[in-house]
Image (cartoon, rainbow, N blue to C red; front, side, top):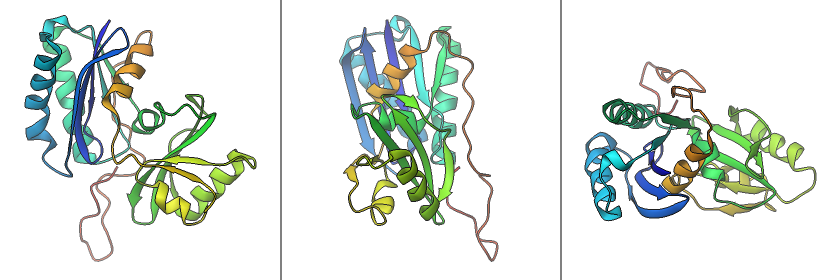
Amino acid sequence: MIILGLDTCLDACSVAVLENGVVRAQASHPMGRGHQEAIAPLTAEVMARAGLAFPDLDRIGVTIGPGSFTGLRVGLAFAKGLGAALGLPVAGIGTLAALAEPLEDDLVFAAIDARRGQIYLQAFARGRPLMAADALDVTTAAARVAELSGGRQAVLIGSGAALLAELMPAARLVSAPACDPAAVARLAAAQASPPAPRPLYLRAPDARLPGGAPGPDMA
């Protein structure tokens, strides 16, 4: 099975192609904005480096959030358009699950800095989610990590990890400003019959800060 993995939810535009679980080619360009202009040419570049044509694909995997509201819409729209053009299934992959997937630890907490004093958090035991993705204030998120850890060392990954580590100095941090697109592809391959992907919003994307100023582009 040949899978295309895409991520535009965080601070990178990332693409990978896997064939039977082996990475054929991948690329990740750090960026906070500009995903819409970057995703199509980067995907074409990765496919060419893999020596594959788009009709060779069997499935597409794409991150659906939480993350940048604009970014997740860009990735999802591109994946669905490409899937429709090629007649391929598109699997929606949670950003937090994709962050945690490469780690082999028994217990992993994926955390994204949601700004405004909040963290998007989800816990996984060997890839199995222990809680639904949630938007929590930092103190509550740290308490949730401590509760689920049960005295074990917490393993934290993602842009929100450092915020949690301030309250949990014994935790082990893993740097990951964005998802590994190969992890997105592996998770997509594992879905037996992927449903139509939908964006995962943990808070209203049109929230506004005090005084009427637009809030951060995180949903």
